[in-house]
Amino acid sequence: MSDYLAIFFSVMPALLSGFVQTLKLAFMGILWGSLLGTGLGVLRGQYVKFATPLIGGYLHALRGTPFLVQLYIIYFLLPNTGWKIFQFDSWTAAIIGLGVYTSSYVTEIVSGAIRSIPRGQWEAAFALGFDRIRTLRLIILPQTLGLILPSLGGVYVALIKATSIVSVVGIVELLRQAEIQIVRFPSEIIYIYALAGALYFCFCFPVLMVVDRLERRATRGLRFKG
Image (cartoon, rainbow, N blue to C red; front, side, top):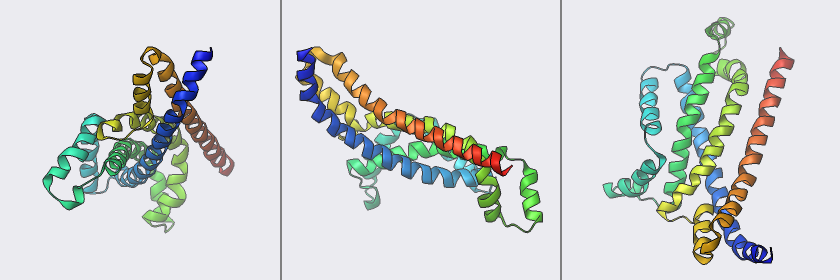
């Protein structure tokens, strides 16, 4: 037991350092991906001419390829075009990659939720003099929250786990720190990975709990209004 404690105190500072990097990556990926995905999802959910087919192609391209391939394209391929706008450092490439990856799922979730609302509600709102933006803001989107939030929890947890892939572009996040510590203690692979897994759980579980609580509040508010 004393050996495990010694290893714990030896590797934990490095694992916590990697954990902080994972937190930063996940937060930025969630923020950027949610904003982009929500905007695209609102457009796609309304069948906007020209925009809907383009967004569909965007989703097929992203969801039909592995995240690792997308990250390689962003970090290695785009800079080779010579365009200054595509000269990304590791952090920028990782955040863009995670955000774009997340946005593809958020777009589908938001558009699906909007499409699930009966068309008659749109028509009734227009008949009352509401424009499209007011109809979305006051009638359609509040009803979709209970549908969107449960699925978003799963997407965000998947994003947190996807941060382990960004080590290929030189970012030392939690899993990469665990691999470095295994080099120091090669006979304790399972133990070190278990510590890293516990840190991932400490991040993922509260995210799911927060999303679940927001979902309950949203659905309770809708029931109250009804």
